[in-house]
View 1 (tube, helix red, strand yellow):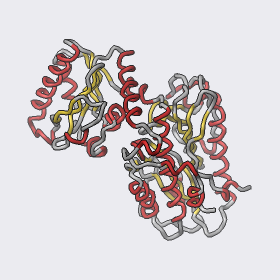
View 2 (cartoon, rainbow, N blue to C red):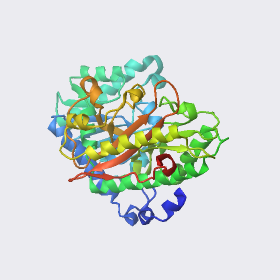
View 3 (tube, one colour):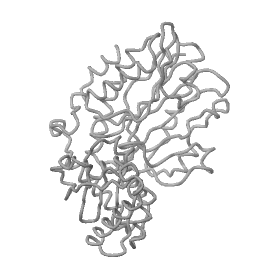
View 4 (cartoon, one colour):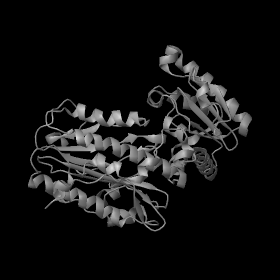
Length: 419
């Protein structure tokens, strides 16, 4: 059975719906999803006594409101659009000519044109534009919540943040309340996550079936992109597909290299897919035509062992420190090229928390609690430091009340697991 046959035989794929089109037909109440997420952000604001948030990260705006507009463009050209959020009011400042895009969203009370306080827009007068922007926003915040408000901000020009502070506002970082809001998923959100994963799995299946020596990495990578876009997903956030010697160390981006015979091909999806939710799993394939070598199978089995051991120790109520203590120890010969995390949160992108290897915990780790409703990606990269190929595997899971549910259902490679 091919991977595409495997997908065709699965009954749960019939409910995949295109982004924001007829969600009820797939049993997804997107209105409920949006209201839940907005409520989560406001609850985390209240816990920290934050009177207002100014969100400019396009993913966070989408999380809080469900609105989307040129997501990659607006991530680079900030502040092209931004959201002012208080306990009682949600005002979206939208990019020029795009105000109509947020029409009908129950999470947005008002849409106004944004003021782009950037050097590209204002040139040498950027500081003046930043001050004018800060005066406008400070006056609006004052009218909504009163004077001397505590305002959480993110991804603003340094001059804009300084100008806000000069207007008498107490400026704090918005990252914590937003990340803590995003980390717990609702039942309806999980329907979106599963829909995104199923669509991504279809794309990875097409990519796997297209593998042949003589194809370039870029040509193979484009198969996944085409499938994701055709299914109304958004984009691949990274370009992590490589082959042969370029699989080790990890994080070598897809390029024009020609895939050779009997090479490993490692892939990390990193897909912002259906409904804006992240599909993040990794697989490693073999280009053929012969069977994988003993060394290739050994690397694959070690990576497979790491992922499954770490999924096996995850449980609700476990602290991050406890997880690190119980997690799989990376053997010395693979340590130098280890993946930098043992696991990480996953929602609309990679997110809180980061869970570290035991040996890295004292330097990089922080504590917290693994809670039901968190979606985590359990990572492995196995490659020797001296030479040779590497294997990347990763599974996406949901923390439940009693353990975990494995979300990423794409099969592992039987030929690479064989003894």
